[in-house]
Length: 349
Ligand SMILES: Cc1ncc(COP(=O)(O)O)c(C=O)c1O
Image 1 (cartoon, rainbow, N blue to C red):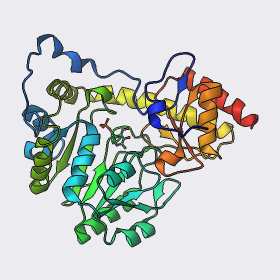
Image 2: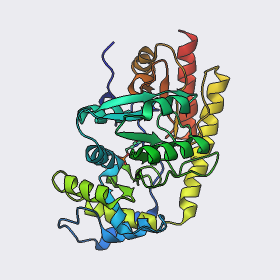
Image 3: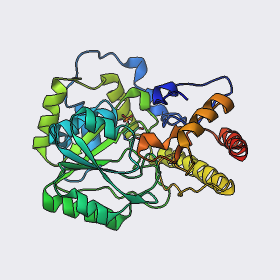
Image 4: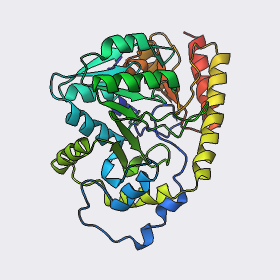
């Protein structure tokens, strides 16, 4: 079997392939985002910190803060990289909860830092383990709702994490890219002096390819340092993407609600089908992923791709060997068909 890598699967389609691979919404962005296109004419460099009107629009959601607390980035991905390089230096330890979003560990390591991994039980952070390991780390990354588990962290745990990082003066990076895609309760946004929020237009507004995200910090010193780094790396985020993102912020709430309804129906479908198949699986509470236990996960992923034209991602990429990640960013018919192929394969194993 060849070594599996995500570039083998991203963008692969057609020829009867059913992809539970990539984490990108198949639903359309709000029509409002295109409204600026016919008259759009700007092409010069933009502010490195990001368009003022977009930052002003975002600030409306963060009471007591202004556009000066935001930096618009090339997706949440760039925000994560800039924040890590701002708060840490080579040799520093960064705390992650496992299973983690698959870019975190490489991002930490490429910046010559060291990941410290905290245990979870059924996708929920084991706070005792967290408390033991948080001493001495340079920063903490929390991702709730989570990619790849779809699990949402409990509010009491999140509050304890806010408190201990504040007491220890440790930056708390909160990756909230799925904050709006949550099915069991309202999202609890981590907040406080040490919190750096990372967010994106990729998931809520189904705008992955436009590459617009942002970070928010109450600490202007962090914002300034991020801007300095960005000035000497990517400079401004794509200005047309920012204009479209601005229009997305004006989208009625009903747009997001209509998407959440679809995501929840798909969640219910894929979860109940997996339970029927006898798979050991935690119920996703947000985002659009599910991570059942499947033995010999890399072999499963390879066979499903090569023999049954179904794309899935091995848990190994997320620090969770013996599991397989399914993204349910595809319509119900394809979900059913894909799962039938999985069931067939597992029966014959
Ligand atoms: C948890 C998490 N963080 C960050 C990202 C990156 O998002 P963006 O497209 O905004 O760079 C993703 C994308 O899948 C994600 O799942």
